[in-house]
Length: 218
Ligand SMILES: N[C@@H](CCC(=O)N[C@@H](CS)C(=O)NCC(=O)O)C(=O)O
Image (cartoon, rainbow, N blue to C red):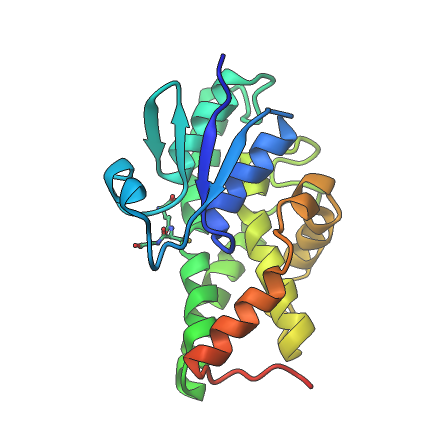
């Protein structure tokens, strides 16, 4: 089987999910970085949605991070989904549930007023409160078994850590199970290795050039 080729944008949480999964499965892959805000012509031709991640496998172009994850999970065993179809479907549903949280972190980053900051936080809090009820009081979403749901949330906790470190803003403060989940995920090697060098700096520069409301602690 030829190496998959992943097209990435360095700070994209959806690509980060693919990277964590490829690392978990120890897949040999190539990665190519683009700027999604100024994409090269070849990417415009390759990607039907104009979004990353895109993964090219033997000339076939895959897009949408959830679809890419399902493909990787199926082709490189053992599966990180539960075996039971109902549990598997439930896991897929919760993966979907986590995705809009990334719009929350983006909105927070780009917010220009206190009101916009508050709205982004409130939106994320509503979703985190629902997850807090669903999450078992065990290491991973499904208990002892690490799964694709855990991978889907990992980039969120990386971003929550960024806001805590630079803005003294604790997005998880009201959610003890989310804190425990975050600690477990951030301690996992594949998650640590999925964060590109200079990640914090890239986000901080973006916020500065956007004249975002949130200002980093000195
Ligand atoms: N639903 C998509 C979302 C991917 C997405 O929003 N990617 C962003 C970067 S993080 C992007 O490529 N944005 C460029 C655009 O919207 O034109 C997935 O899960 O793959």
